[in-house]
Image (cartoon, rainbow, N blue to C red; front, top):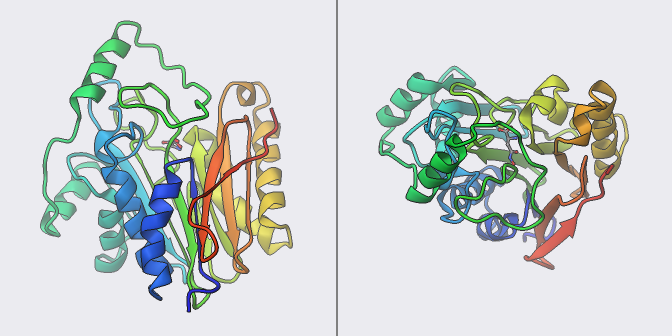
Length: 301
Ligand code: SD4
């Protein structure tokens, strides 16, 4: 039975992603298959300007995607700055399963994807292109603290990466993270989402963590690894996320006032916790009792 299974995701569209993942979990499938399926759903979501094919481009008008996947047994794979491929999370899984490497970037990642049978096609939507042309008028890179609700296509809202963590009926953990990164980022910029330990970390012995927000802060603090290590030391998921946020603030108190950073964690007992720098972070929780639970995270500000 799927009694102990559970899946959690960042942001309100995490509800829909969880429901897709739940189909796998409730049928006795693996956490790894579940998070890949959920992340693929987010990547094809027509309304999401920060994940997958409808994402906003970088400052040169190029849509460049980052994604990672990690199994609780330590296997992991990721792609960064990948263009023209609709499902980066699945390419990340192929990197994990079909190569001796963990991370492929840019052209090499795309070449590998095509070799693996992924279709190469231009993804930038007319809405995203229009938003980019609008942005070019001022061309200021000033990431906003996220809107509380789902952003619309062409919205310049920056924080809607999907981070998803799951535990399956057999107690195995897995996670996935997928994003188009910060809108209007520099060409070649890589965020936290494809960096194992920054945007995602999973360890069957302890639990799993993922992040959303301005990725530079997560990379600086090896943040998802930090959250998992804090849980290893005995913190609950919520305490671990809160302490990691405190670390972000201590390191850059001034920047922390204007940047959003959000952590979500799931431990091996299925307990869930979250914490954010600023209010407005919501996360979705799905298990056998409830498949549409959306919760508000606590925050510093
Ligand atoms: C990044 N962390 O590329 C991602 C952006 C994000 O919600 O989380 N958006 O820095």
